Length: 372
Image 1 (tube, rainbow, N blue to C red):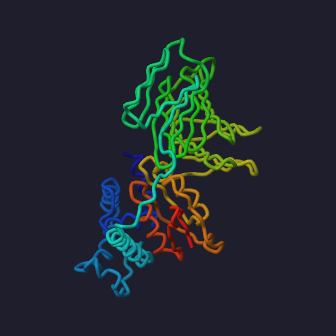
Image 2 (cartoon, one colour):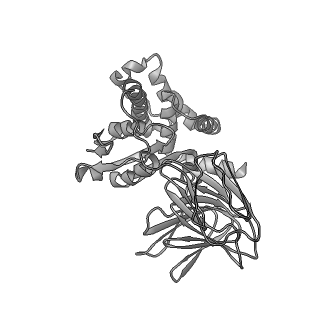
Image 3 (spheres, one colour):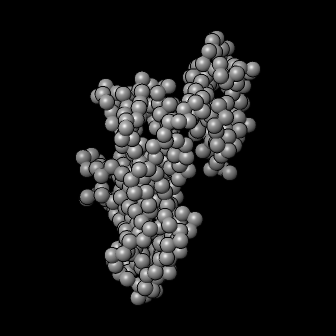
C-alpha cells in the first residue's frame, strides 16, 4: 500500500496522463483498469476531483453529434489543474471525434499484419514449429513442450538437444515463455530470443533482440546473463525490462532486485526504479522511470511523450505490421503526446494524430500508410 501511495502521488504531477484518462472517461473509451485508477486518484486528491467536475459540467446535456460545435467560455480558475482545463476540453473533443470517425468509416480497411504473423520456434536441431497453431504437435527428444494461453513451457532431461533455440514473435503480437530454470520472459512484438533447453556450467545465458520483461529465477550460484546488441545484463534474480529495438541503443529498466549492465569496459550497477540507457556513442545515462508507462506494452499500450513523427513511424510497423512512409520532410518535425492501443484499429490512433497535429494520412493501393 505504501508503494502504491508513492506511485499515485508521483502521477498526480503528471497532468498529461490525467488529461488522457479524463478525456477517455468522458468519451466512453476508457478501460476498466484505467477508470478504476482515475477514480482512486479523485478519491485521494480533492483537487483532481474538482478539476474533473469543472469540465465534466461543460458536457452536460450536449449531444455527441454536436460536440464539435461547442463554444467554450472562460472557466473560473479554482484548482491546481486550472491552466490545463482548456487542453482537457480539447482532448475530450478529440476523443469524441475519434469515436464518430470510427463509426462512420466502417468501410475503411483496417491494415494490420500482412506479413508472416506466426510465432515460431526454430529448434537447435533445425526444425521449425509454428506456435501460433495451438494444435500443432511439438516433439523434441528428451524435451516436453506445452504451448497454450499465449505461452510456452517445457521440461528437459539431461539428454536434451544442445545448442540455442530461436523463438521469434512477429509484429503485432506478444508471447510468454518459461525457461528451464523457471525464469519467465514476456516478449514484445518484433522480438527474438535465443535460449538453450538446459543451462549448463556456471551461468545461465540467453540472447535478446527487441523488447522483453524478465522475471529471473533466483540462483546465486549461477548468474543470469542477457546478451543484447549493445551489452550484457548480469543478474542473480530480479525483474526488469530490456528494450533493444534500436541496434545502437539498449534501455534497461529495473523493477526489483539488482543488475549490472556490462557495456564495453563499463560495468554499471542499477537499483530498482532506475533506468540505464547505453549507446555506442555516449556514456551510459542513468535516470528514474515511470513503471506504469514503461511496462504498459504488456497491456497493449504504448505512450508517446512529445515524440517526433519519425519515431512514431518506427513504432507503427512493429505494432501493426504495416509499412509507413512520410511524404514530406516537414511532417517529420511534428510532435505528439498521447498513447496508442494495439487492441484498437490503427485508424483510431491516426485520427487522434490528425486532430492534434498538422499531420494527415492515407493508405495507398498497396496498403502502405502515408503521412503528410
